[in-house]
Image (cartoon, rainbow, N blue to C red; front, side, top):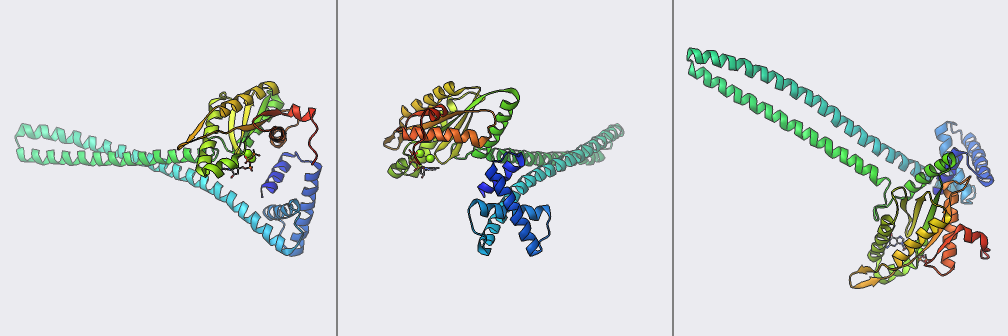
Length: 354
Ligand code: GH3
Ligand code: MG
Ligand code: MG
């Protein structure tokens, strides 16, 4: 579904290659034919579903059998449901918050109203007390004092209710903020996640196109990381990931962005830097990691990483710049790991035979 989603996004931006265009028109043709054959009403919603089904089949070279159609239909359905569920959850949180806010405002109004009323009642009773005192009627005085006590109690109960409503409102506000954070962060390392990175790259590319503000991308991949898991266990592996993430986090400027791209792959966006400066920064990350002994129970784990660097250029989309950084990273791996390579090294060297 990932590839179908990418294709749809590219189509929306109008940035697709000749091959994408082929897939788009073929999927459109097949979707329309299928819908006509089966008498499915051609509404935008139905078309979206069947277009994605056929695009998925074309992208995965799946032959046009009814089993495959069924299978891809289920995947699309699942994908759309998931999307819908996420949207619904956020809407639900927003609705809940609004409800509490309305409820509290309503309550507050009522409390204030009744407090006013009580104030007026107390005022008039005090006046009566004074006149009773003057006429010396003691027992009535007592009754009235009792009444005043009761009113005070009612007031403090209303105040407590108001407090409760305020607490509920604060809890909901915090939950909403947490939810918004979770949507953009990787839970293990606390770095930004891949989705956020891609949005960030789109923003930066727009800024580059409009204002000429350059940036570079460093892609890092831990070396022989599988061995760490095999030797020390998965939890040790996680601990290494967290350590590397904090090296990246602590070693960048405010306008830079560090993200966990995948399992043991990380991407750092370096603001306003060219290829040479970004390569130096990547080397700084590299030597920090190399010289950081990672302590795990009675073991000291030593890890290195390889790095690929690319700089934004005209016509880039997130995938193209990430792809160049990835190719440079691949070169760093084949050059023996624990080193940094940039897209310039790709040009000066022939790619190894496939
Ligand atoms: P290379 O130097 O070529 O990158 O070798 P490698 O072993 O690092 O590469 P490979 O891609 O073969 O293995 C990556 C490993 O990363 C496999 C996977 O189990 C591990 N991994 C991915 N995500 C996590 C994670 O969240 N926690 C842990 N502990 N391990 C992870
Ligand atoms: Mg990897
Ligand atoms: Mg690796």
